[in-house]
Length: 145
Image 1 (cartoon, one colour):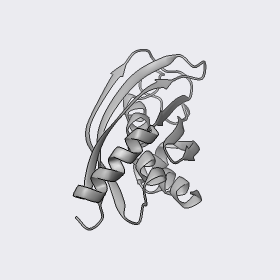
Image 2 (image 1 turned 180 degrees about the vertical axis):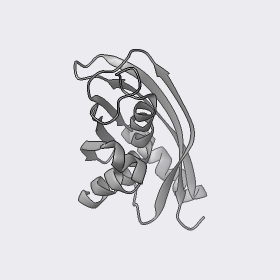
Image 3 (image 1 turned 90 degrees about the horizontal axis):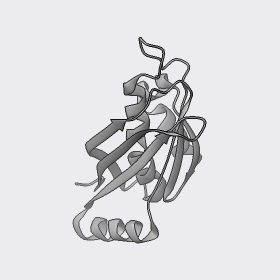
């Protein structure tokens, strides 16, 4: 799991430059942090692209933490974000997959070599207040497809 943790933080140069950090990672669950420092925009709040990145990464992180990364890889198919409030602190997101969803996905992978899944979550500031809502449609594919 340590290799997956490092990969999430460093495999994509843009994500590495943003300073995104994995706080918790286990099968079916991820918690991430985007630092405020270095990700400010022209009006002194967190850049919308940094928040979008924080909202997009959980789908891939859940894939790698839950399914065999030697056999499968994730793709983002569709992403929506609703910005609710300016962010002037670090931002956090928690996302998960239920055991039922994990079993459904694995069944689709075994049968079709790919599976779609949805992640919905709120991005929060350090006080725990929701500052954005995200919904991502992802696809997991077998490496041999």
